[in-house]
Image 1 (cartoon, rainbow, N blue to C red):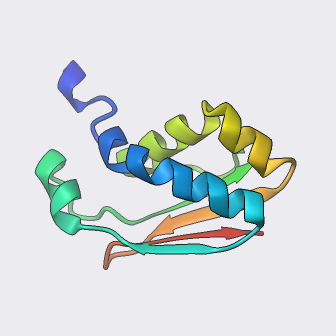
Image 2 (image 1 turned 45 degrees about the horizontal axis):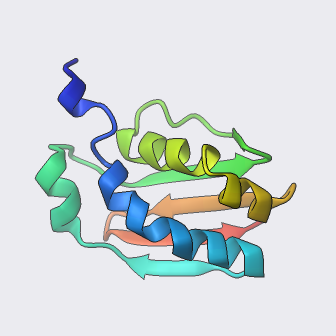
Image 3 (image 1 turned 90 degrees about the horizontal axis):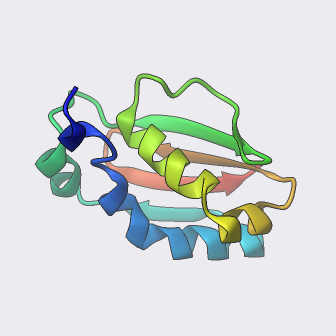
Length: 106
C-alpha cells in the first residue's frame, strides 16, 4: 500500500468534527447528508457505508474493512475535545448507502 492511500478520507471528516463534538456535548443526535462525490473522488470502493461505535475512547466494533470508518475513528479518538464531550458515554456513527451520516448517543 502506498502512503497516498493512508488517511485519504480524513479531509472529508475534518470539517464535521466541530458539529459532531457539539452534538455529543448536547447529547443530541446528528444527521447530515454527505456528498457522495467527495468520497468517490478519493476512493474507489463499492460500498462506503459503515457502523462505528465508540465508547470511552475505544472503538467497540470491527471496522477493519472500512477505511472510511477507520479515518473517522482515528480523528475522533485523537481529539481531546471529543473525548471530553463523550464523558463515559457511547456514540454510534453510521454512514448509509445513500451517504446519510447519522450519529446518536446510546
